[in-house]
Amino acid sequence: MRRRTTAVLAVSQVLGGLGVATAIALAAVLAEDVSGSKALSGLASTASVVGTALLSVPLAAVMAARGRRPGLTLAYLIAAAGGAVVVAAAALGSFWLLLAGMAAFGAGSSANLQARYAAADLAEPRQRGRAISLVVWATTVGAVAGPNLAGPAGRSVASFGVPLAAGPFVWGTVIFLVAGVAVWALLRPDPLLTARALAAVDAGEPASGHGVRAGWTAVAASPRAVLALVAVTTAHTVMVSVMVMTPVDLSHHGAGVELIGLVISVHIAGMYAFSPVMGWLADRLGRLAVLGLGGVLLAVATLLAGTAGAGHAQSAAGLFLLGLGWSAGLVAGSALLTDSVPQAARAAAQGLSDLAMNAAAGVGGALSGLIVARAGYGWLNALAAALLVPAAVLLLRRPPEAPSGATGRRKGGGRPADGTS
Image: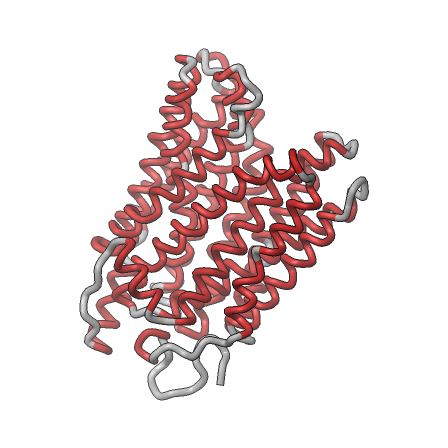
């Protein structure tokens, strides 16, 4: 069941990553075409991030009540519908309809994020980091290939009267439909329902709520879960805030489109390609050690990127480490959160985590442009580094281990999954 579940989720991640990356590559261009304003072009991606955040909790509630399979399928269908609305908005020239479609399109990212937790449902506690990281790694294929398919996608449907920049959303709609059908047909038996049934047999765990309150109650009861939530949210916010303004800074220092694309590709490689290494380290050295590593990598990344100026090689190195630090924080933080809350409350806590990380990143991405405009790219990186301080303080305090029923420790004792004694 573990192998089958991981394989199905990996396929869905390839498709989901492809659907998101193919369409998002030209989202700003499409928004500028529809609105006629360059100043409004960034709102398309912002709407997608907001949609991802807002949909995380209701989708997690569906999964908590009915399982991963219907929740992930619903997410992909909402994303497909959002893609269709974006295409209709482009044809009608309606900017507000475009933003609504982009918000629904964000459900594709919600599905991709929730899939990492689905991989952890049936994993042994000592292999949970690797299970999460393998599904995150599968996103690499779609995330890297997607932007390169945006041009062919636009040209492929131009003869049907679809605007060139809207073509990728036609492809995204089809890809999400295929992903939804694949999950519905193949993700059997449901990993979350199976894990919950086994946990109920083993520990007699009562049912838990499904909403934000239930998630927060479970997280607040465990200092390690609080640390995990803060670490994942911080890593994602720092990464998004710096990444979205890097192309602007590079262009101001003479970089062309090809060089900017190369730097972003290096960044994406850092995000996804090395996630299995982070998963192995999280299981081998412990979650806390890898969270510390992620914080150090993010701090060094902001130092390199913020002081690079016209040094494009230094910028690329900074963006690579930015992606690598994000990978460490996401994988180790997700594993630690799963370890630290009871099985019955995990889906709600995981939904809360995705809500927090995407909402914070949405705010960070929106403010980053204002910070660069008023103070410069260097100050943006300095402020991003300052965001790491609260997580570092929580980590240095080394919160006590949660009760064994919540951490997912193996019966019979031994070291807990986070590597502490």
